[in-house]
Length: 297
Image 1 (cartoon, rainbow, N blue to C red):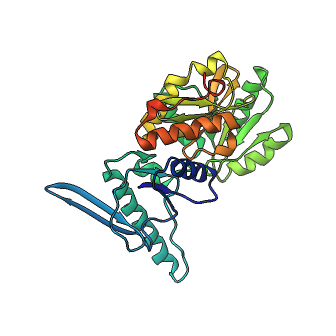
Image 2: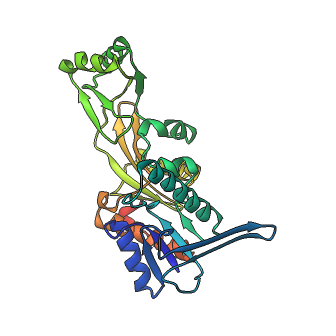
Image 3: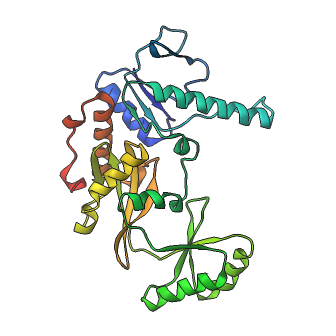
């Protein structure tokens, strides 16, 4: 059985499920695999690791692959808040251990750090980007209004219009104009802010296994980043990773890292190539997948 951990509202889950079943393969989409009717048996002893997962009171089935799109969510109805938070953590830990021990292909068998905090801010990816040799926009994190203003003046002198203030907790950003510095200073009295240089139009790409699929044809500077994008996914422990690159004043830089790629961010050709590659990884036949030429360069 090919197991998809996710939701029917997720276009990626729906497309992968449809394609697996179209091939005549047994596939199941499960929002929360450790809730009834799911039953987990996980044993570690001197003989090794044994994992069984059953559904619908039926016999245990061999898990041929797992596609992780969600860690599940425990319904809070009937729980005290503290008890719900505890049980949610325990359920996540049990699922993480289960996935870590499976010998079959598991797409996005994330590290514990990424498992518990998948929506990390872009700033949180900077050390890994640097380790992989991937350029990023110039950024500063400071609670000093003078340092912030000096950063803005340096960009202005280089002909860069404005500064971008980026949230450290959400995927949001806004442009800081000449009239906004006093308001920014008021914020800095309470917390540091993350400022970065603006970038030009972004081009999305998705790493799927050992392939980089672009949402369109990349320029030479973007295409040259492919080996380092593959390393980024490998270092993050992810088989499926969305990124975006864009021009900045010193060249082409990575401006987004998303460990939960969204098919809606891509056109039909790239989307088809992504699903083809995912099916190849899940069925153990990645080399049989052909990525459309216009989506991959």
